[in-house]
Image (tube, rainbow, N blue to C red; front, side, top):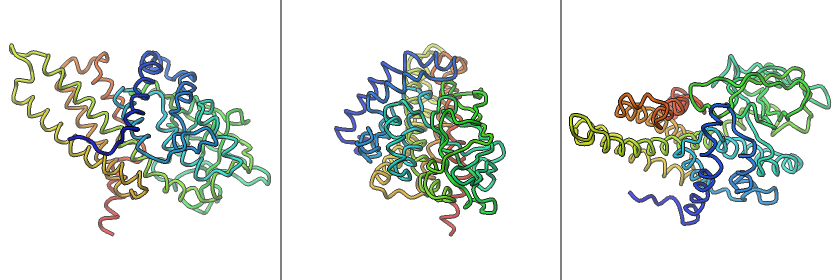
Length: 380
């Protein structure tokens, strides 16, 4: 079916993104995967091309559009290219809204121009060694010391952790407050006591730096409090829908691209004297995946429209995230099986997709958490 969610302007932007990927990302991505980190020059190139801060007001150097469809185009094209290293989705769709919605005028003037130019790379630090989806388990603390906060604790699995110049840290500012005793503090590169641990060795997304972060008596100025004191829980819940939508958009785009690659493969690869595509079992496998992708695409495009209009709720965002990422996992596994032994070889795209995509059902809220959110809503 022809997609109707995008306009001619969005499709023109898609061509810009594709050109950027071909010129600035694809020639270097294999090296980035070996090195475990992308070049900072790629972030600067993304800034020059206008791919960073799409929703940031123009006065701070951004694109000035709140139209989520531009972010969806960007996410789709990065997913189809298998370009997992340059985490512009994290930068734009997850961290950007915190800075634009919660930042004071002074904070926006201080941080957003670099955010949009690529000079300031960002990260958000929630997960701890003993606390993942359960925010009440966060142990990182920030003690009020008058003119500043004293931050102590550690975080792990932090995307952009090595490169980040600015990290939004979720810390406990009221010991007895539970999930409601948390605040968002912005830690900047060079602050005394802020240290980065190792670049974590993952099974996939090798080019995307993921690190441990340590905070030892870091003096964070009071003016680096983002949003309300003890208001982090509400702030986080407010912006989770967009994070989950971004992951879902990447998931369906990745599944569709891998299906296209596999369709071409089974037409060319021969077994028993004829192409694999002539075997009924192969045709049935392709038919099932094509149908599942088409149905999911219809739902995701509707969710994109709803989110663009500001009407997508947390439940439907959770449905999108759960369904699309689990579909991606199933499609990737089946496509690898159809490639046979070649699918296990890293030189084939399906092998990389298998390891890169496995995290999709985990980060941004696990499948189990998504089902819990949906179940509570359905059952009341």
